[in-house]
Length: 293
Image (cartoon, rainbow, N blue to C red; front, side, top):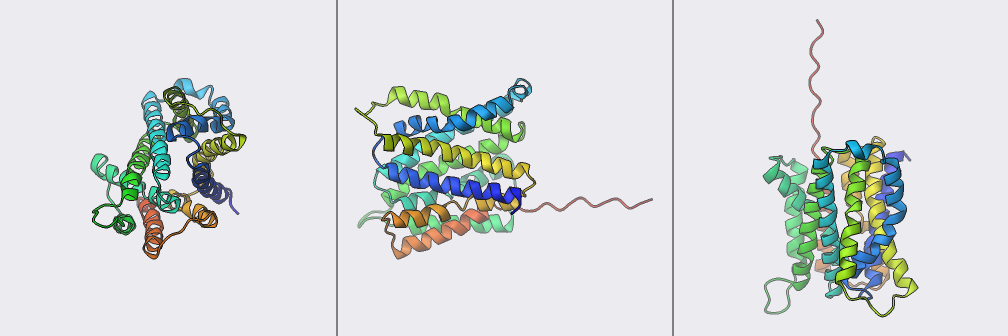
C-alpha cells in the first residue's frame, strides 16, 4: 500500500471512530462540555506540530492564520451542534451521514465567492445531496419538516463553512501550519465552554476516555488527510475517500442497536454517493507544451 493511501485510510477510520464515540458518550455531558473536554485529546497532536513549526510560525502568513483559526472556531461550533443533534434524539446513523454532506456548503461558497465552476461529477453530487436531504426529511404526521433534519442542518452548514475557510487558509500556509492554527483554535473555544457550562458532579473514567477520544480522532483525521497530500496523493482521490467515513461508523452503529427504515437506508446510500461527488475535484488539463524550435 502506498503511503498516501495508508494515510487516507487512517483519516477515514479516525473520523468513523469519532462519530461512533459521540454516540457512545450520549447525554453523559452537555454538547458544550463534550467539546470542551475533548480538547484534552488534541494534546498528543498539538505539541508535536508546535515543535515542528516553531521556527516557521514567525514567518507564516497572518491572513492564512486568521482563516485557519476561524475555520477551527467554526468547526468547534459545528461539533457542538452535531452533539446537540444527537442529544435531541436524532438517530446517529442519520446525523452521521448528513454530516458527510457538508461539502455541499463548501462547493456553494466556492461558486458564489471564488467564482469556481462545478464539474459534471460535482453537479451530480449536489443534486444527489438534495435528494438525500429530501429522503431524510420524514416528518411526523401533520408536519412539513423532520425535526431530525432541522437539528442536523446546522452542523452541515458549519462544517461546510469550515471547509471553505480551510481551503482559503491553505492558499497562504503549508499543511502543517494550517493544521496547527486550525487545531489550536480548539483550545480557547474549549476553555470558553468549560467556564460557561455547568459541570456535572462527577465524570466517570469511561466518559473521560470517550471524550478525549473524540478530540484525538477528529484531530488525527485532519492530520492524516494533510499527510496524504504531502506524500503525493491526488486531491481528486483523497477527498472522496476521506468523506466516506460513514462506511466505518455506520456498521458499528448498527451493531450498537441503531435501527433505520427503508427510506433512511436509501437516503444513506444516496448521501454517501453524493458526498463522493461533491468532494471530487475536476481534473485540470495540463498546459500544452510549446513546439520545439
